[in-house]
Image 1 (cartoon, rainbow, N blue to C red):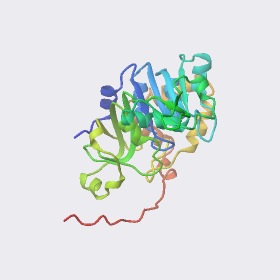
Image 2: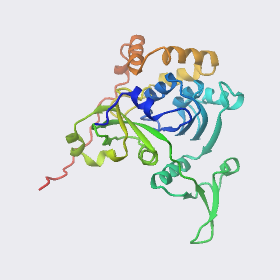
Image 3: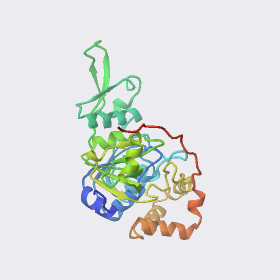
Image 4: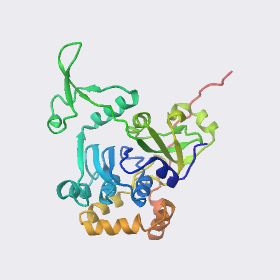
Length: 306
């Protein structure tokens, strides 16, 4: 059994100065873990992520971060991330170091980390200017055709936190939908916390083995946290709350409003369950509004084992 609470998981695996990756590409973004980190007052973190999104905007606004390693920066479909911008441009609430890559460059760093490779080659930096501002993007001569090829270093976070639909108590994790770099960062990280909507019996996992993207051998802890990725979405469980993203664009422009929101919605509740209760008090039918409907896949025949 690897099932523990969110408080226990964050307390054990995330400390001041840790390098962490809370991954999820548009979907599966574990806001519940980020809020627990903020509530615990953890500082000096290096935050790694493809598309930092609102989750890191909130963590930067709370003063958790020293550095951010990322690809693409913005509130998806809406606009800038104003808290991160204040930190970079004005040092509010503290100075923030940034290290930028392309999406593929970040993914290659995770893949190199997962395979314990010294670097990963890619062609996409041959025609851009990121290497001028990021000295970790280097160029080497290919041993096969003597032409230049860009390389990026491995990325091995101290801890990765990923969200998924379901896992068993040992950590065999299944996910479907837009996966992003979930699998790569899971294998790259020194420690892995999996947060899921459901904990299911091992027989459920065995009945559909190809959906298991993360085996238990790399999982340190499993946290059962329904709606733990809100306001992002989890395929088949709840939709993205676009209103939240639009509201964050408005309030995050002002440092005072941002601080007030953190005080009320993060520091002002004891845990994610209380946060969800507060959401439903404000909007009783929120989960009906975000219901994803039904679109089942076709069954497959794995054949009987004899």
